[in-house]
Length: 147
Image (tube, rainbow, N blue to C red):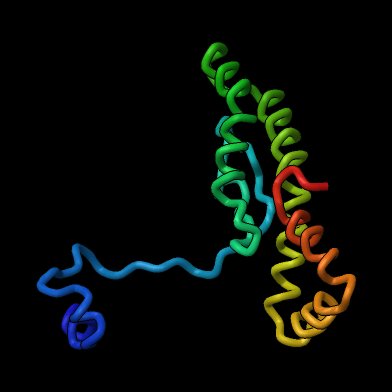
């Protein structure tokens, strides 16, 4: 595999004399949706709890906001020796209230712009005189904390 990889002139130029430390790895398609924020005594934050479409630009801010929201649950779990089922349920509710709506909106907007025909229609609407007023609301709808 390394021989085939290194025979690519563009890749060879980028790597120079370096050789890969291991075999190449990749990930499959990401699912942009809400997942389970807690399970089996563990709390999930960031992408582990739910991955937001990159279109929204909110991945890192969601992870940081999730850490803020998780702090009281973490402190309680440390004090009591683990995440109790009732606390896991409460964390799931807090997480879903904060992130599920924006994740779903961002996924919908991303799907519209993924396909040529709906994207063309959407772009046509945004070019209309009122489109300049709609665009900020569309972008805000993909941001955490937006209504």
